[in-house]
Length: 143
Image 1 (cartoon, rainbow, N blue to C red):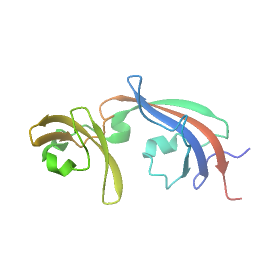
Image 2 (image 1 turned 90 degrees about the vertical axis):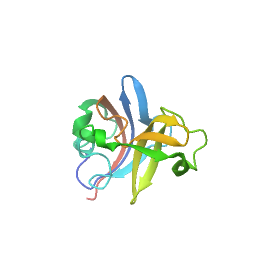
Image 3 (image 1 turned 60 degrees about the vertical axis):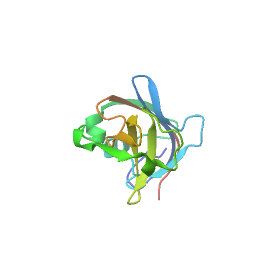
């Protein structure tokens, strides 16, 4: 039975949780298909997949600083509500996925005050314990 290694094409289900709240999951949805080494997943999470085999189910705990870096207060900025024109009724607590320079990232709305929005560009799981749960569905290795 083959195991996950560099360049493996892997079909998997995963979830990221913190404080027993699901942040992101593919369970009960479409599984994710990735290529190890090109997945775009944080390096620590991708490294935890090496050696797993088809059918394996694992759960890992990580310190978010090891995945998302240290919390940076300088990433809290004020922006105009006009910059969120594609979102109706933006409110505190909203987590919005956005894209810049071809990269996807999340921002958290901290406060809405009239036309001004206080936003946090730190990853929403920054400064939290993170649980990564994975189920390996298929592995394709070049022979």
